[in-house]
Length: 181
Ligand SMILES: [Fe+2]
Ligand SMILES: [Fe+2]
View 1: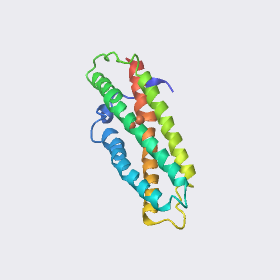
View 2: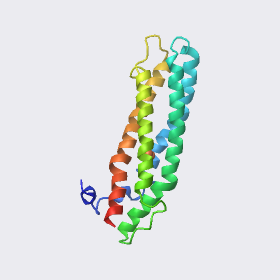
View 3: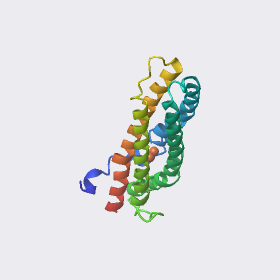
């Protein structure tokens, strides 16, 4: 698709402030930051009670911890670097001013890095789903075990939406704006 067809200059105001109430920072990032400290202790509890009979729980916990660490750094990079630049791009377009030169050469550089990290998140999500039998709790699962899997399913769904929004809407728009100016 041609870059110019991805965007219209009358529609973007909802993306103009990525830190606004409806932007990813206050929706998906906030949710992820709230859920990580909720799911982590649940894993600890379920591992200590069921780990002996379900040793895959230890691997699941390790994968989740790695993912949580990755996401924490990833979201910080977006909020400190790429998003503020994208907001400035949107403002420049609204003000009909030229874009400020990106501090990272081209916006494609951080976008490519973020997409690469999204791929890694996708791999972790697939590994979690595979090791948990599609988040199907075994018959002997206690309420905490069931809650862990239910919460993990929701966490997974939100991450898919989060990555879809960035990969398929926000990032292509940033590249299109850069190409058009
Ligand atoms: Fe994000
Ligand atoms: Fe991201």
